[in-house]
Every structure is written in structure tokens, then in C-alpha cells.
Image 1 (cartoon, helix red, strand yellow):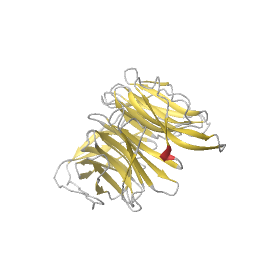
Image 2 (tube, rainbow, N blue to C red):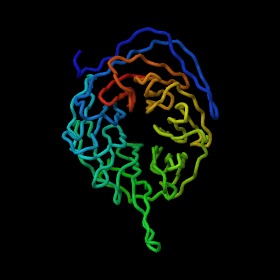
Image 3 (cartoon, helix red, strand yellow):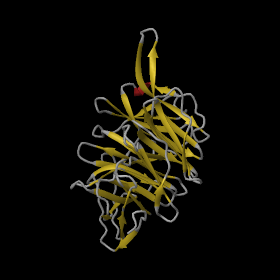
Image 4 (cartoon, helix red, strand yellow):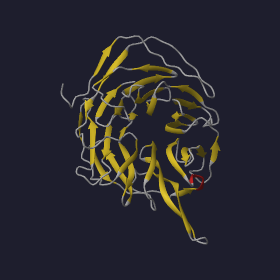
Length: 354
């Protein structure tokens, strides 16, 4: 089999439905269906691990990684052709850098991270399959999270330094900035005072005013807050004390889906009240990422109890575990367009239709 070809092989098997107990509210449905075997292909460079994958709503997917060192090569990129095959994507050199977040609209994506000079921000053009260095919010010291909620319109959570002149002290915190031209220009970052001594994990925006942000304190406490005025004011949302983190957020209006971690398991969590009330379903494995074509149709990836790769599709609250082939290590990220999803391990790519 060609290493540049991604194929999905179908077999008929019994449906495996995994349902968990709810921390707040939960449900579980059982059905019988065909389970698709998903086949991986090796990435183009085993010396540069893949970190992030992202798909436009028109189903153009990219996978990217960096070494985090100055050793050559320092970065790698691949894009999925319409045929389903993955090809090399020319990306900028990124010594001692880390890609932290990606997000897309129909014709492009933004790629954010941290580099020695501060903020790393690239733009992907799906028409030309090209990546270029983009403008960045100023001042900023690295991108923590990105979310594109409309064509060329995105929110970025960036690191900034806040200075108290009278006390002659400074502190690191996060700020939110917006672009409406695909990252060419950005609004002045609005500091999020509540993130002082916290690390932002994710952001999802329904529009340019309405966003949800999750962060974790140094003590491991989860903080979820929402804004309806582009980050000027924030309201904290209550989450169960057993939740240690919340990521893979995807919000449409006041409805959101995400992936929460506890000390014992990972949870698929949903809200239709913008975080006031959550419904949860437990997974039997450590999940690393979740992505959705709609709020109800999702793919979740991670690591099984034997340390191998694990992938399941989600329809409502029913989970179907898929057999994997040529996927030698746990899956670290997943992304979906309108009809196609792509997942990656550190040196593997795969594609499926949920």
C-alpha cells in the first residue's frame, strides 16, 4: 500500500456502545450499525512529531508539527488532497517553537503557537495549499487557543504581561483578540484579569461577542467563563469539582460540546444553556481530543487501556469504537470539516467520515 494513500475499509461487526454515568445529566442509546475499520498512513517525517490537525468546513485538512528544538528540520506540514491522499505542505521553519492551536473557516485556517520571539501565527490558504507567516495581536507573547467562528473571523487567546506601575510588579495573564480578515489585522488584546495564575486551555466563540473560555489554575482547579461583549466582562460557570480540565470546545449559539477530564476518566460534555447546566457521558479510555461535524455527530480519539490508539464516533450519546489498522501510537488530535474528519498520531494520519 502506498504510504501516501489513506483508505477506509469497511467490515460488518457488532456495534459497541459505551455509555457512562452522568455527573449532571446523561443519556445513552443503543443501535446496530456497520463499524468502519480506519487505516492510517505514515507521516512524511518521523523526526518531527505531528501536534495539530485542522479541517476547513469545505473538508480541506492539514496536519502540522514542530520539534521544539533547533535541529533541522524544525517543522513539518501535510495537506489532504481531494483524492484522500496526504501530500507534503511547505511550512515556515520554526526552531524552538510549539504549535498550540489551529482553527479554520471554509477557505483557510489560522495556526498559532509560541516561539522564542513571542507569538507564532501562520495562515493556511486552502486554494493554493500554502502556509504563510501572518500578522499577530500586539502586544502578545504566544497563542494559547484559537477559534474561527465565521469566514476569516477568529478569536485568539494570547499571553500578555500586565504591569502594575505603582507597585513596580508584572504578572503573566491571558488576553482575547479578534480578527475579521483572516489574521491580517487584530484588535488590541483585552486582558482577562480572571486568568491571572491560570493557564487557558481552550476557547470557542459563537460570534464576535459571545465566547466560552476554559482555564486551569496552578492548583489544578478548572475555571470556565463566558462573555457576551467580546471579552469586556466575564461570568464564571459552575462545573463539577471532579472536572480537572475542559477542551475541544465547540459552541453554536448557546449550545456547546467538549471533552472534560477527571482523575479516572474522560467525559463527553454538552450544554444547551451556555454552561449553566451540563450533560455528560463517560468514556472508557483517556481521550485526547474531540471534533464534530455537527453538535451531535463527533469523533473522539485517544489512548486505550493497553496504551494503543483508540477512536470512536459519537452520534448523540451513543459511541461506536472503530478498529484501527497501521496506527502504532495513541492519537493526539482530531478535526472535522462539514463531512470529513482527520486524526493524527505523532507519526500517523488517518481520515474518516463520521
